[in-house]
Amino acid sequence: MKISIDAMGGDNAPHEIVKGVYKALEAFHDLHIQLYGDEKKLSKLVTAHDRLQVIHTDEVIEGTDEPVRAVRKKKNSSMVKMAEVVKIGEVDACVSAGNTGALMAAGLFVVGRIDQVDRPALASTMPTIDGQGFVMLDMGANSDAKPEHLYQFAIMGSIYAEKVRGIKKPRVGLLNIGTEDTKGNELTKEAFSLLKKAPINFVGNVESRDLLTGVADVVVTDGFTGNMVLKSIEGTASGIFTLLKEAFNTSMKTKISALLVKDELRGLKTKLDYSEYGGAGLFGLKAPVIKAHGSSDANAIFHAIRQARTMVEYDVCGIIQSTLRKELSND
Image (cartoon, rainbow, N blue to C red):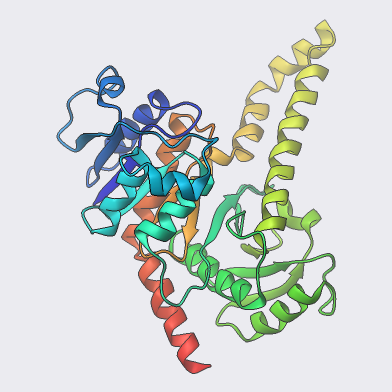
């Protein structure tokens, strides 16, 4: 299996990207990686490996670049070159921690969209209290969405939860302002009707306050709402740990207490750590394209690569395409 990696994307590139790549090569002996980036910078970090190939690129898509323009203008960037080899079938999937909008543009215009998908969705596995996590989409690929888009998101998310996360008959919920069937705006009401007929285990409307309790295995929403929920969860988790740290440093008594519960706090932090779940996948493309968090460290990059590998192994993109083709032909 071959995966291409953007070595120059993200806040901690290229050193953390390279460390994550070596961790993946050590863990997965069937994995071959093509690493795209500035050869001069990478030469200081990369050592010879028979399953690692470094391809030089002299352009980088920055976080401040306008996404579509950057993909069209910076043809020799690490991100675009990484995507091009997926398009021609030289590699099976790609991973980047770079500019989210640019990666979505590269996925759409370079890798290509599945014919049966109107709009690709950004999907991420979010943490839950029980440590199982849930898949949420869309996380920001589409600020606006139509009911039929949410229908497609639900099918794609359900397939991913079953094939990659190993959940039998994953519960699919529609994010809404109440659990009653009649709740919501025009979008959610129409989407609710479609999801009731979809080939999924639809459990109805779910509220944002219940997400971390594991109310559903897959949660569907539009990209505008999904992105705000994502950042709210990340910000709340970060804020809670900041408050805990301050509380445990107020006196000698609390400092001793912190030492006594150190392992439990570390376990709690790991349970709520996004990096343990991999990156956000762009669902609806012809091949797996994984967006790692911009601040990813080596561990997060490793899990993003693991996620891409698993999607290839279980042919998630192919199953999404065949499932949607079958459903749409029956309509």
